[in-house]
Image (tube, rainbow, N blue to C red):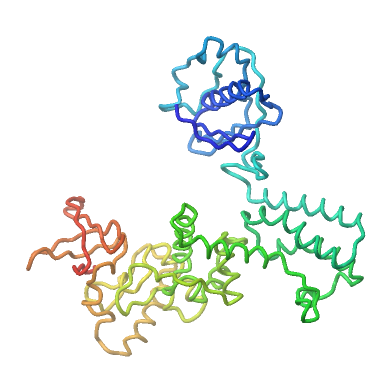
Length: 453
C-alpha cells in the first residue's frame, strides 16, 4: 500500500482513495505515535471526503459515516492489522468510493468531519480539494477585526501605529492573501478599517483623500502603501523570480501564462500588448484569475517582465485574429470566437486559395465575426487580388497548431492529408487522415514544409 501525505513536526496530512483507506492511515499513525510516546489527538483531528457519485461531486460530511480510531491492541495486537474484509471495499477496483463499512467491527472513536468548502486547518492554512472562494477572505476579515480591536485598545504615536500596521498587521495578512483571489475593491474593504485607525492616530479625518494618504512621506504625504499594491507587488516578484526556473512552480507559472496568453489572444507577448485591461473588463468573472490580476496590475503600473514569446502557430507576416479588430467591441467578438475555435492566427482561417476566409459553422456571433474579418482583409489587400499570406510563408515547419489539417509532401509528387496532433520543440507530430481513419504517425522536422488547409 502506498501512503500519500505530508508530515511537519507533530502535524500530519494523509490522502487516500477510499474511506477504509483513510481509516487504515489514521490508525497506523496512531500506532506510530504510541511507539513515540505521543498521544494521537482525536479531538484536533478531522477528515474530508470528496467522492463522485452519479457523476457529481459529493461531500462525505453530508452523511453519517466517519472514520474510526480503534484501540491498537484490538486491531494490531497480533503484529498485523486485523481488517474486517469486504470485497466491494478494496482500495483498488470499481465502486470503492461507496463503501459504508469500517476496518474493524470493534468500538472506535469517530474522527470529526470537515466541510469541503471550509477545509481543515493545517500549518496555518485551510486545506481542501474544493475550498470555497470566500474562505480566505473570511479568514482575513477575522484577523482584521481582531487586530483592529487590539490597536484601539492601545494608544500609541502615529509613527508607531504606522509601523504596527506595516509590519505586524500586513505581516499577518500577507501570506494568506497571497494565495487568495481579491480585486482592488475587496482589499480596500479590508484595508480601510486599519487605515482609519492610523488616521485617527494622526488626528486626521477618515475621509482624507487616498491620494494624500498614499503619497510618500518625503513628498508631503502620510506614506501609507495600499494593501492591493503590496499584494500585487509580492505576486509580481514571485512571478519574476520563479517563472523561468526548472521547478514545479516554474512549470505551473509558465503554463498559466500560456493559458492567459490564449485568453487574451493578442499576437504580442502577454503583458506587452496592452490588452489585459480590455480582456479583464470583458470577462464575466468579477474577480478574475490569480494571474490575470497580476498582469492587470503590472499593465496599470507600466511594468513588463523581460522575455516572453508570441503565441505559437504564426507564419511569417501573420497577424492574430484578435488584433484584426479596430475597437474593443470588435476585439471582444474576435476573442470569443478564437477561444471557441482554437484558432488564433489569420493563417489558420485561410483556405488553400488564400484569398478568402473559411468560416466555421460553429463560430459564436458568426455574421458579425465574418464582417469584421472580411473588413480587415479588404483593408489589408487594398483592393488587390493577391494572396493575403504567401504560400511559402504558410508552408513552414512550426507554423501550424494542434487540430490543423495539413497537406504533407512525401517525395517529389506524392502528398498526404494529415492531422496535426502536437507541436513541441520545433517538431510537429502528424497522423494520416485516410477514409476518416487515423494511421501512420510521422513528424515534420525543421526545414520541411506543411501547408495548412
